[in-house]
Amino acid sequence: MSKTRLLTPVLVILMAMAIAGCGGSGSSGSGSDSGVDPASVAAPGSVVYVEGNLKPAGELKSNVDSVASTVAGIDNLGEFIVSELESSASGEGEPVDFATEIEPWLGKTAGVAFSHLEKDGELSEPLIAVETTNAKATQAFIDKQAKGSKEPAKDGTYEGTDFKIGGSEDNAIGVVGDFLVIADGEKEFKAAVDAADGDSLGGEDRFQNAISAASNGSLADVYVDVGALIDQSGDSIDAQTKEILSSAGIDPSEATAVASVIPGSDEIEVDLSSELGGEKAPSGDVSKLLGSLPASSLAAFAASGFGEQLEEAVDSLDEAGIPPSLPPNELKSTLSKAGIDLDQIAASLEDAAVFVEGSNKGNLGGALVVISSNSEAAEAIADLGTLLRSASVPGITAVSGKASGFSIRSSELGNSPVVVVAKGNRIAIGYGLAEALRGINSGSGAQLSGSASYKAAVSSLGNTPISAYVDGPAALGLAEALVPHSKTDFWDARPYLKKIAYLALGTGTDDDLATAKLIAGLKK
Image (cartoon, rainbow, N blue to C red):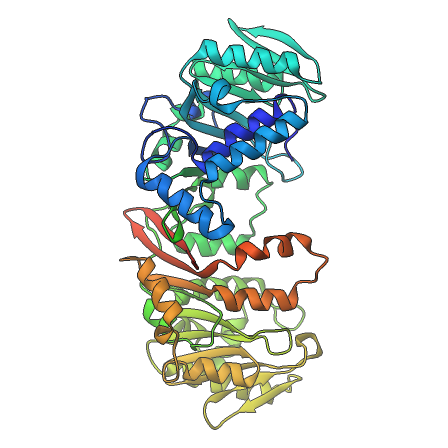
């Protein structure tokens, strides 16, 4: 939680502008067309950086207001936030008149930078930079607010830059070049002054290469140095995950990501791009497989290259062994003697998908569906079931008839067994026989591709192939059945969640970038 105290009501108003899009005319997308860059006062190597458009105009502002009206019944979000926060500031003894005290000098862009990850895993306190078009007017406003604050503030100066320090946490605020800067303390404020005159996040090639992929016309852009976060978290990513990422051409220690938020008239779009730190980005169109899943699915996800990832996982498992019964480097050889070639099976596997069904805990279920390039994988499923039964593995039962395979029943798995079945070029692993059979036969029954909501989700993505889908009302209904009323955050958010018609995720590649588009369709 941020410890910023000095000029708190003003800070909230300023940063709310980045969300609400208040006041005046301005640029059509995130950032400023005045040539100033808030990242120029952020410390070099900052791990997370958010930049917002304070004065969107035209279609962007219209869309912001449309989303606010749909979700919260507010016709002009900017005016609403200013009114509410002016009232709050007055109640705390720090009255503010936005129109006369802030708007005349408020620029078009603002940035929030988090320099590092703390030992407890939380992001550091933010450095906030708000563009000003009149440094003298901004300083006069700072002086007035500090003088009227209930908590005393003292004067400071560094490298010719004046600032105020106040509040129980010694937060610092002042004008650095073209920005009103609010820092957690004197040390952080001085670092912003040093960044403005020397090395900064904005001057780093790593940052510039990533942020250049941000979408035009966005309200806000978010930069994340994935590699630095992993490193500062103690390199907590496990070895198997690293190997899977590596097989997809991803070096997590070098990865960065950028997300751009773009409101539409009846949707909210988030565009993502990631510099993977490798030579290639994952690719593949899984929309056909996703659309073939059961029409009753409330959520579904599909991914390409499943076989490659499985090969990496099997190799790791073979190398490590399965204590105490299977020593290292004997898994594949043992199965090979039984006529099961894991490498050949994995090589035949192509795309995979997961779907979830149900409206409450009692009928919740789903399955993993994998597509194979031939029937050998399906035949191997039957052989594996026979092998497990002959080895007298507890809880193993044969499945025959509509599909071949086996089930695994255990008290740890709950009331239903995990069922593995195969038919033709499809393999399904489901929680319960009915779910597994729905997965194996989903290509021939009622499919998602016939659902009106799914069609709308696909349409919203344009030329980007869909790879994940959530039915908003169905998912909310399940959450209402599962989440206890003691979880007040969910129930407080419920009125707004009811406005989501669907979530759609599409993925793709752009040279060496992995790209994704997430869209929340809204109900009018």
